[in-house]
Length: 309
Image (cartoon, rainbow, N blue to C red; front, side):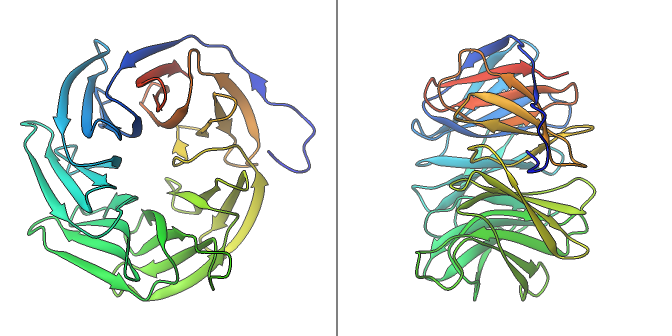
């Protein structure tokens, strides 16, 4: 991954198991104890719930059109699902599986919940309102105007004070391919930082010191130092999902080579590649506390399980 390194990452060949889910699985979420994985099935319009102990789907929850991304909150008691084709976010009670829907704006995509659980932030593309905010107590929705360009992904700082929003625009747009940093209190723009082409996903590191921005079209990774506001750019893989953080290193899916790549979080080098056996079009991944990866496969309608320990 480093421009200055000539070493090749170690390739580890682990066998993966697969679980059949709905049609077109994309975004994933995993609960805190790793016992449940929730899968957005983009084509079939539902969310599969996987019991990881017996590796079976125990529920298919109908949502709305084209569920894209999902996040768990309130100790895993609620799931929030962006429905790209229905201008809505589905709210799922993960115990009863009851579902409600909140209209947020055109083409909702990215989603994150505030650290205190009081607000859900959703990237949308509606009349220059690029961010919707759901009050989790009342389900009232407000929207933010004045952001520089249509937004894609969003994450929040560990201290709950800043939102990091990736965006792209037409080639003649004023802020093509950027990360916008805004206050989560006033929604004022703090900084606009250029990224690589099509910043598809934003991930804040567990210590809050770094923000990882995946440049899908450029096959680059931009790393922002949150203290100095400086960035570095590295060669990367084709990946649409967020960077996933393990106990020591970080992980991503190489969608072209159908592998999970492990990233050293000190040097940002790719130090290991693990093939995903039987994968056709791996899309997104989550990781449990035992370093087992769950990877959605959009083409095969499966979730693969890969031991990365």
